[in-house]
Image 1 (tube, each protein chain N blue to C red):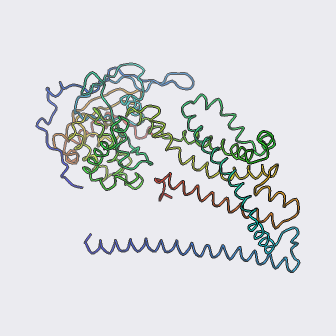
Image 2 (image 1 turned 90 degrees about the horizontal axis):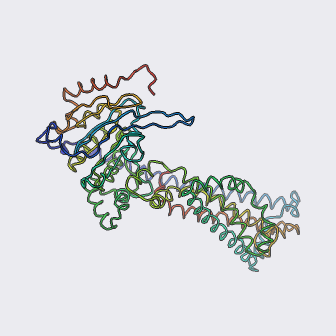
Image 3 (image 1 turned 135 degrees about the horizontal axis):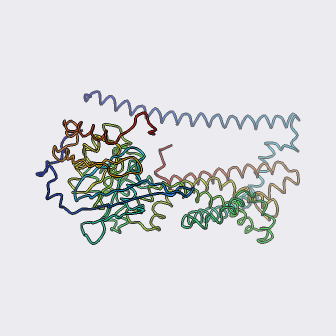
Length: 281
Length: 278
């Protein structure tokens, strides 16, 4: 749509040693998860995940479908306890755990709340006074060109606009870690490219740490600093790529047209080892 | 797209909208014209039938007779008194039953165990024709208004409870997870997600309950009462005064329509986000 939202090129395009030493926001070590089937047998979903996610990093997790991505999401979002292993969360106040905000494929806007009340949801739960949270919400909505929609219900907005509102709702509570679970897969291709760009720039502007869970290899390469490739279920981390194309080139779209993009794509595709004729859903 | 094209485009869109409005307004008028014509035709044919001895007015009543009885009952104030009695008992029982039932159904969300334990009782009560309880309720509460209120209450409570409880089960798990991830307490999840998300279910139970409350109330009046439209119909029926029966039936229809319209208006107020989606 426009290029004015392009990300400024960071002076340290590649993650250097100093950056690697940055404090991690979340570390998973030896995380396992098994579910018990109705017949009583244990079904392992996550074999072993050990992953350290650093401050202000954008990391993607890609895996073959059905590999347990949503289980992973629920564990990172602390909606689910791992069967084994540990998760350490460190926020800006290292004593307390990091606060996690997330965004899913479906925007999960409450249909009975107006846009502004949807944006305010987290602040309301945190007990921020009404006048203050409305002022904050109006400022953010105006910033992303949604001011005119503040008093409308979500059903009147387009899919892309609703995802933008969902992002503002996530950002406004200022979480330490943002978890994105296939946030674009319900959108058409053009909207998806625009939102990719927009979200990466917004998140970098706010210095956010991001975990993107996706099955879209292209999306992962275009947006991320690192891409973790998962194996089939029971899943574990197969390989981690230091991509960083969007950070280096300043735009996801540029990342997609870079020569390295295709090489990463082919390599990750091979790692995923997807059998076209196999029993994929 | 050039500016000129854009301009014509907007004009066209505007005129389409206007056409739509005109169409709905004109169809509203013609629909009503057909309705009035239809009723008028039936009434006229009925009266002609009575006058030419094709229809026995003793068994069927006659339009002129009905109008005469209606006028007499309106003038004496009896129709108004009976209508007020019936509407009062129905509305009080309906509101108490529907509101308390909905609240109970919503609160069951807090305790799955309680819900599981009482489930078969609720299903049994729901299947039971509530009018079967009338003799007992009349013994307990007498033949006055109180027993009619109790009957309307019983008829609406279980429907409202089951519907609200079902509403709490249709809630998207992800909305609740989202609330939890934001640090919401169980009470906040209830007030901010469970209750508003169940509102459409509750309203639809209210709609159904108008009918159920009227059935129970009128049934109760049939069995034992000192006033009300049900009693008026029942007594006139026993006396083979079909014209008065008709007056009672028509008044009840009007009452039902008015109550239904009121609930629809309340729905529009309570569910503003669902307007324009249908």
